[in-house]
Image 1 (cartoon, rainbow, N blue to C red):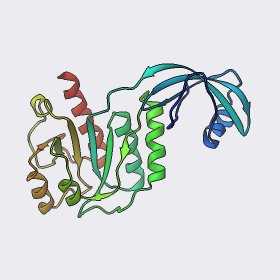
Image 2 (image 1 turned 45 degrees about the vertical axis):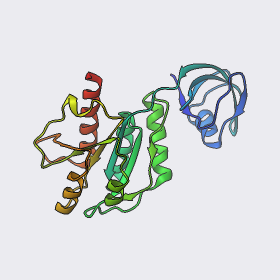
Image 3 (image 1 turned 45 degrees about the horizontal axis):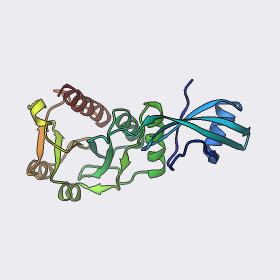
Length: 236
């Protein structure tokens, strides 16, 4: 089994390093690896094969052997998602990461019941999802922001793809072609208020689109919308 672990710091071939307390516990006590076992470490700079050269229950040292994968181009797909309760929010973080988004912005809207995000837990989820999905860079998680602030600060080079339950327009190839980045906006359970919808639709780069004739939960909407954007991007 190929074990992949996220290593946020720079890696240099033919150097050795002690693992963190968390990684030591995982390698020695959860996976029960042995001296000589291989582990792959990755970050935004690439991926490296390593070998365990010392192992005890509370101390593991590895040697970085060779670079097996080089840095990939950053994802141009972002997600702006109104906060929901803990369980579906964790699904959203996991699935958005697996689907390759480069950035996740948690948003507070008028009908958002949850006002905070546990950042330590969120970062742990996206790192684990990055390890599992064979990617190199966990998505950036922005600070929680109110919808009006998000709209005001939106980069003019970013196309805002608004998954709108009131829209009948399908997303087309030409909607995604020449933009530097794409931001998928998903509303709260209960949808945006009429005032908020007007503010969103006034944005110069907005493209409202439909993902289903049914009313979807936020986590289902995220998976559907990002999968659709990825499909069209890969077809272009």
